[in-house]
Length: 212
Picture 1 (cartoon, one colour):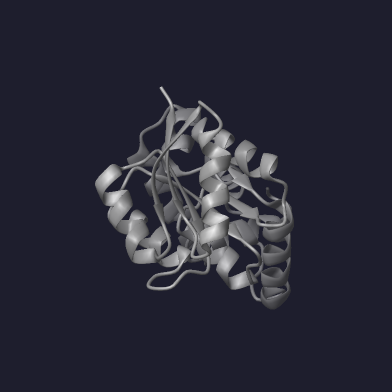
Picture 2 (cartoon, one colour):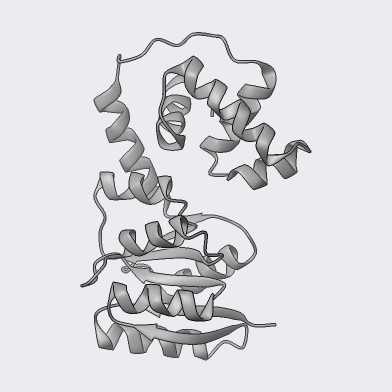
């Protein structure tokens, strides 16, 4: 069965190019194209596609806003952000909101298709240059702000490594053969022990201390 897609970009020429790119491949089926954030979230609600390819900069709701709505409404679609550029805060926000892929517009078309294909298989497709830059700058801002207590249990350390690798709770639970509720309990304990607030800060902490 073909992977269903909703494509959103406020530039008609780029949007048409994206539609032609994916329509040529029988592995994909484009169910809607959109030029605004409002249209994109409406299309996701209506079609519930496997993957949404979103431009970050759009009128009436940018890509990050649409990503948040998809997360808040627990819609099943996985989001791939397509962008000419993203600042560090935008990258960290996208990660916190559960983005599956981030691809620069300057990348070759084959890279975008490959990223969407990887996401359809349940893999993360995050541009490493964007991620490393954002995390490094955030670490510089937080340098020296926290000590590094060696208080994590073996299981908690495993979960920290998996979070830093981009795995979500369901994926962690499957790998460790435990329930999602147990993962959440461990995470709350980890946050409390390390003095962090959420997955992004935990990822920063892990990179800074060499836990990841």
